[in-house]
Image (cartoon, rainbow, N blue to C red; front, side):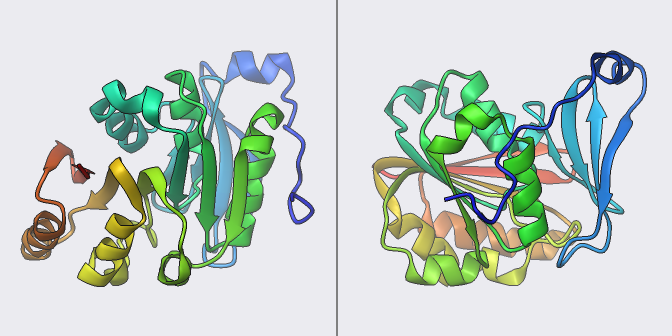
Length: 226
């Protein structure tokens, strides 16, 4: 399954782990297919994935993932499979595992370099429960027939959410991919207040049973399908 990716968990010397509590340590710099600058940082003994102007992943501290999982904490025992659209460095995998939830996860990422980094920096004992898919989320959802207990949408180009992610068509595909009783969470960054109001309306029309948490410019939209 992992022939396209490094399937070993990177080993970090103890002194670097220790020093990372005092200042961030660069572990890897590279160029992605769609990100001209990618850097893996070790900070407080957790891996971050940074682009030139934002943080794509922050271990099990990644606030959007933590917020999303906290909203569904009572449902975690019933989550057996999950779909994560936008891999980052696998923060959602780490957050779920930290909370004692270890579902089978389909990890979809358009940039094969980012997906490769996610699989490399995730602990190897999680690999047999992860299916990495190198594909555009729009194309993946257009042909998806599987059902999931939990879907996390975390798709960005820099700090912009691509337009298709906020469309009725895409969100309907997400809704139709949820099992009965399933949950969805969507990480959005507000760059324009009028656009945000439109996104909120579209989301509410499709997911009437929803909740929105504001964290700075981020909005974590969550929904439940009964």
